[in-house]
Image (cartoon, rainbow, N blue to C red; front, side, top):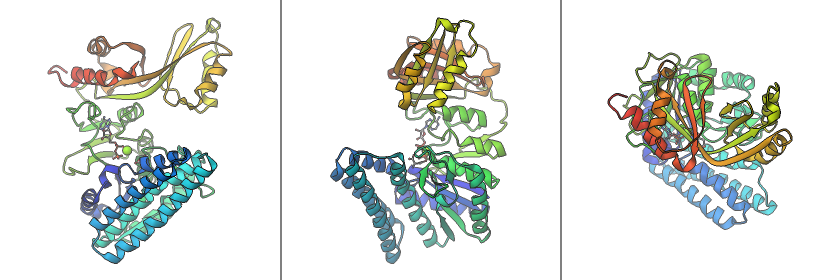
Length: 454
Ligand code: ADP
Ligand code: ASP
Ligand code: MG
């Protein structure tokens, strides 16, 4: 059994969906379970419609929803031949869009949207794309069963970033999916969406379809988890910043998690975790060029001659500097600081300490104000916004000397505000100004991947 996840660009139009159908057909003998994202841009449009409703721009929100409905109708019409099936699909789409418009109306009337209502709205993208794909596969004579992911991805009620409740999920997945596979059908389900114990629709956070695929794969002990996307695999940098970035044939679970965590959007940061526990290989592949080999993410790849495997970057970083003379020799000070971040459920990415100061970074400033107020009761605090993290990642960083030197030389006149060598020793992270980040990525890429001696 394998899990195949297709991202938004892999199902953006009828031609892309046709590619997906061919790819699934080729793997039919390996008993695939298919996880699908919303069509490219749908989740953004849905959330935009919600925020426009909040601002009272209901007409514009409706216009956007109508255009999204049209895109789905066009895909169905170009993908499916049978008129009656198309009509049925269009009716289902229209019902969903009526629900959406009611939700938007509610938001406009109340003048507020809850995270719960945002998840109800965002979930429609995956519910529609999966409906089309399942119908199209059926029409091509491939036996499928559309399974609502909300029946088995049970989550906390932290809407928009819900935590999967794995013990509940395991029971449900084992109950629902294997019998479908054993009956010779391919289960088609949605990524990203789930439901709380009370049955309220939730989502796993943006990019969460990868996570769904990995949860299913690890629960059922899949042979592999395939992540089909719009690039050839995991590359030496984001190809949008460095067009000449190269595809990595194989990387370790640890390298992949650090890359995802530090901004490589190609994988959701939590994807690797369930796969690691069961040592299930994750393979990243290009649905537009399915014959390329992709990148295999495995537990113990052979030793690589590359000291750095990839450069990741993340914008929108806030640096918090905390200074206190009382900190001198005072144990418990760091604990006090972290307990404040814990209280506001705000993860800290990088930390660097000296005798009298601690600098740390966060990427979610939602509770910044309260955090600073509490920190100020014990220390002097200053906050720097619009910063970015650049991160060089590679297992061989541990055993290679001179990497830091090469990084600083390559960065040249770009100002570095903070440095951290991750505890895992496989990444070296620097904080710089947000406006410098793309240039910094290009410079490090040139240093480590575009020189003969690299
Ligand atoms: P999907 O819709 O298939 O989930 P995403 O847009 O979430 O696709 O992720 C794929 C994108 O990730 C690529 O188009 C690429 O721009 C970006 N990306 C960032 N860093 C990397 C990297 N190191 N390797 C590959 N892709 C990367
Ligand atoms: N559709 C969701 C998003 O755009 C989930 C995903 O694509 O993985 O974030
Ligand atoms: Mg993604």
